[in-house]
Amino acid sequence: MPARKATKKRSRATAGQQAAPAERLRTILTRLDKKYPGVRCALTHTNAWELLAATILSAQCTDVRVNLVTPALFARFPTPAAMAAASLPEIETLIRTTGFFRNKAKNLRGAAERITLTFGGKVPNTMKDLLTLPGVARKTANVVLGSWFGIDDGVVVDTHVLRIAHRLGLTKNTTPEKVERDLIRILPQERWVDFSHQIIHLGREICIARKPRCMDCPLEDLCQSKDKTWSSRR
Ligand code: SF4
Image (cartoon, rainbow, N blue to C red; front, top):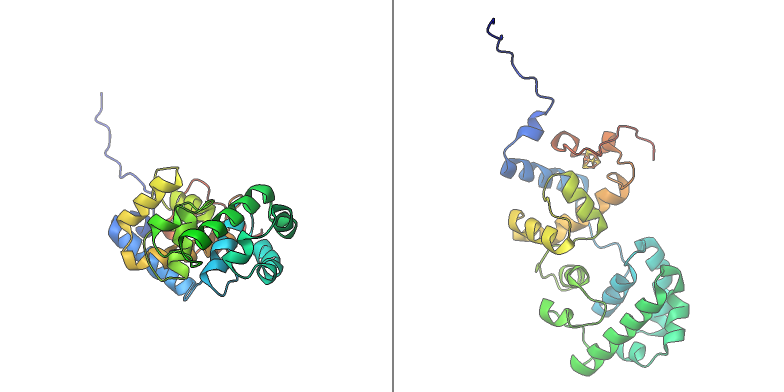
């Protein structure tokens, strides 16, 4: 049997895809900085209470929708004490269009009561205390700590971060807690807050769930996702 000719295996991976993990991650962060310099939380707020309430409302809802609802909500209940004294039907009426409004109203009032009774009316600034508030899990706590208090205690893992971390091969896990743990392990701590904001922007504009616009993506040559699509149309 004739010896088989050794053939050079053709790789379709680009140099970016082949880069060592640390170098690749550095390139991803540099490109995100270039594309989204100085990004901030898109939820309108002027204090920690407003940011906390807006983040609770943002579950299963767009930031645009939340920003339409919060001006009237904050005008009516400007402090946790005011919200703690509110009736649930009144809160529900004001937040109805954000979805899951009954549950969200309960969480808003419950969080306001606990902030008023236990934390002297001030939104706490530690992960441990924030997690004792109704409706607050690590995602919401990380938003408040990172975007208001400037404390990088963790990485916000919302639906965009979850999806794109997978597409970029930064995690194989599927639960937000485990994905956050993976991101914390590989990202420099000073990038934890900005990385989430940048990825959330990328997820809204380009790496959208159903049909990512890979032609417009600054990370295209670094991405080996099976979800890649090449139409630039939304
Ligand atoms: S190349 Fe496509 S799938 Fe990969 S991160 Fe960019 S938009 Fe998302």
